[in-house]
Length: 113
Image (tube, rainbow, N blue to C red):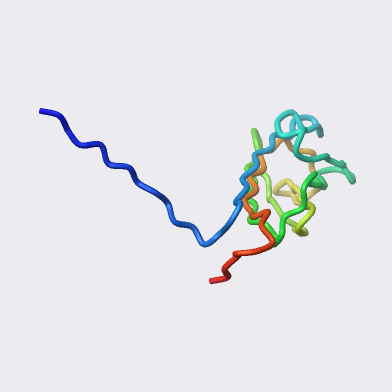
């Protein structure tokens, strides 16, 4: 017996959504280096600047790799994010991490809920 194939569509109030993933190892972008640049401002202090600015401030998530760290998203704007890492002491500490960014590139049709 053949089963009917059903197609599902996602309706989103956001137009031209964009999701980017970055991996920072040893202070360098090893994944996502074509979508942004990184500056190490000091121990445990990183600024990632996006090549293409978002229309609204994007949502970001950070995952520290290999060590217990306190993570602070110090600033987040349409064009960049500044992340700081502290040990449990607390003291600034260089950290490898993943960064996830979700936002929109559309200047029209954005609905705020």
